[in-house]
Length: 481
Ligand code: GDP
Picture 1 (cartoon, rainbow, N blue to C red):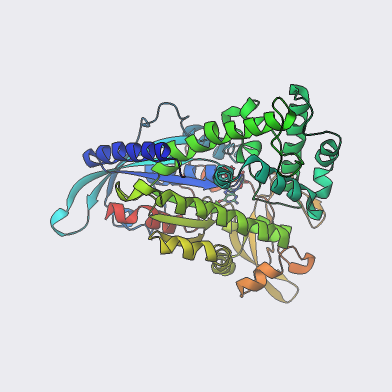
Picture 2: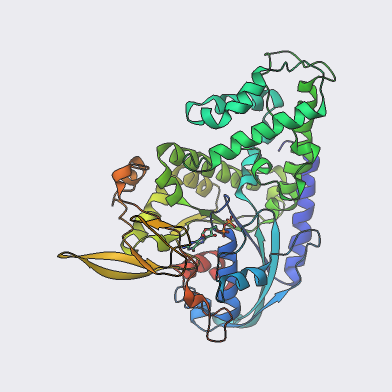
């Protein structure tokens, strides 16, 4: 961010936030992670735990009975959609309990927490306003575009499409690229077609079996409300080196749209939303990457590194020393730990710690506290010992989603099953090195939300979880001390 005006606006907004914060302490918590990492489920579980209660022994303010009252309030930013908490909760409970609809754009929710301060001369009733900001992690990867020209980005993106692992999914795009001349006159149909083919190549790399993560531009996979706009209708081209594209050419139009994307989409997001966060949780579906293989693991590591790069840049702006420093705590959380037996939870945490290690040390050098945790926002399984022959095996029991196949049996979404999830190796390096191996023994079955999520009155009951309280303590604990 070399642009002074851009930074000045971030600083002005921070100042406004700080002044507002003096009147009433406010904490802006960002919740991010790549698509399907569990953001929607996490926020729903967090809000429900605060509003309706849960078992949270590690979350001190709660366990000590100092949280008096929590209420939902109108959010501060009128232009941002509200997080549809009530709809998501309704989806999780009741007879047809199912997982809620995932995050596809930014959303916000405000909670006001009335609590009793614990310590000494400051004890007494207080309030903390908690603004939760949910946004796709894909958007953070766009930060890398701010330092690249269209030509530089084009060269990288085209090379990535030609990578052997991605060749099949990128074939249509690469063929179309070969059939055109970047200097040819621009026309909308060609631009749109090429852009669609490029988006198709990105989407193919995102899904199984590849499960790649670091695939900017972020809005090509998660367009939010901008789908179809010209700023999202561009693609990289095979450009001849060193030459300016002639005016009116396809290359010139694509380059202009790339610029529009950077200035009308990427910068406003970082300025208006990201730069204003105080705390951040990054959810990671580490098990999906472990299942997919070493290329997906390497790619996830790169994506996490890129994500942390944005935290560093966020704190490092010229004017950031003048205003209160922002993001001071980052939690990386491996989600869906309920897919593993509890003996593997610490191991999953160790795998994540290793994945973010490099990025973590960098962020800590800048004064932000970084932690990792393996959690399940909503625990869909319980544990059981199952006898197989002479052996007692640790199993997890849950209701597989309709259509899941285990040991040749197809499940109907109503019947419970005991699954042996396999064990992560004790050495996290080994776990990463063996990612994707067929004899690895890890089996991930997708389960329905737990029946326990529905209370006696048919509404959502107390939601079971794994280590959600640890996440809450790290993210909020000191502000409720
Ligand atoms: P988002 O795209 O980041 O908003 O992801 P979601 O919160 O919608 O989660 C994606 C899917 O992951 C859900 O539909 C669930 O199938 C699964 N999931 C998320 N959190 C959990 C969890 O705590 N436990 C289990 N078993 N599954 C989860």
